[in-house]
Image (cartoon, rainbow over all chains, first blue to last red; front, side, top):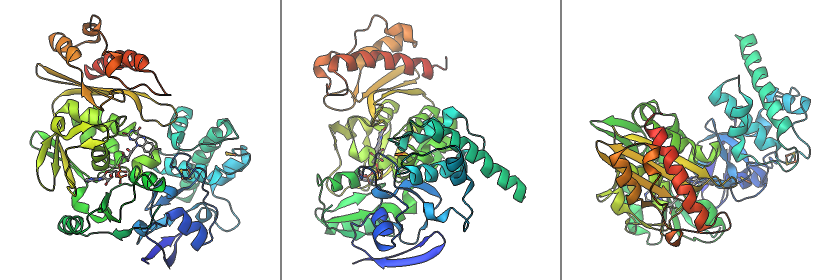
Length: 162
Length: 268
Ligand SMILES: Cc1cc2nc3c(=O)[nH]c(=O)nc-3n(C[C@H](O)[C@H](O)[C@H](O)COP(=O)(O)OP(=O)(O)OC[C@H]3O[C@@H](n4cnc5c(N)ncnc54)[C@H](O)[C@@H]3O)c2cc1C
Ligand code: FES
Ligand code: FES
């Protein structure tokens, strides 16, 4: 079986996997990091979104072996100890979730959105950018609000840190 | 997914050797079509040859009168490229409208072209622009490359290396998306180069992407949306009808999308 090594949330990990092992299965089954969810397994829903080398991708549509040497960030890698990441805090504050199943993917997509498009996101941009993330519960309204607030909070933190 | 061997060649030469040695291997690019297909067991190659490490196959260059795009260049890279936005802005728009952000981070122009999905966006864009597909063996005009539903002129084991797109056309792509899949229900690409006009339609043809000659003739005389008013839409008979849209509705959409593309291409 091929060996893969990658950095996950800043920690070097490795394992022997079958070539057909998906990144999401490596994360969940081998590393026991179950924050990343599988909603559809058919590349539609975005529950499995993680960042690979800084970009949001669907981990159910990516082979673990193809991520050898990559930097992977999952939902578990966002919080700083007990302090939630500003995007996580915004989802909590604005009720951006109900059952929470889609939330890890939503938050990883939202952070990617901020990384690419900045801290000041319009409602229209957010809705358009969420095309790859499906939520069965909320009707999206509060997710959009949460992302707008979370993006602004990420900007504020950055300014404060400078 | 059935088990397979995985190879990640470090050079195009290695990739070609691996393809030659592994009869029913498949090339893996972004995996956004191939992996879902393998999960559904609609494909079960004995080996995957991942082009992901081949830096030589990705990137965008302006060479003479052409834009040259490496086969492994992602949709997000094409959409965000300053060069593409300046030289063929309609192509950046086309790439930016494929799927969703996560799919665009992985999916590649080479993979999209090789797959030739009848509802994919690039085939229409590249056909209208008169692009050339360069492979490990030869160069093919887009018109000779796309041969039907999910089929192309590629031989077994032939690898697409880059796409050459002549710059200088007035070009736009207008897409009516399927709201669930985001593929084109109907997509129309229009390019005007000198006196010549090309109109290419995706999402609708029973045989995949096709050129709409009647619209081209009318637009060559007068390049604006009004010129299409007397032109009958392509007959539903040669069009695809399914649960998403009937052939009649697709026929109607072709007329509407062509007008939108012409208006966008003429900058009005
Ligand atoms: C949710 C979702 C939405 C999508 N929406 C759209 C859309 O709106 N419009 C659209 O056009 N597409 C859409 N796609 C498809 C997407 O654009 C794919 O990225 C693309 O069709 C295939 O590219 P890939 O790089 O992922 O190729 P892969 O999946 O890796 O490969 C596809 C096929 O091409 C072959 N291949 C790949 N690269 C080469 C090469 N260099 N030379 C020879 N053969 C090669 C492979 O062997 C395979 O048969 C969508 C996909 C998903 C999952
Ligand atoms: S589980 Fe990956 S997109 Fe739904
Ligand atoms: S909160 Fe239940 S799926 Fe989004």
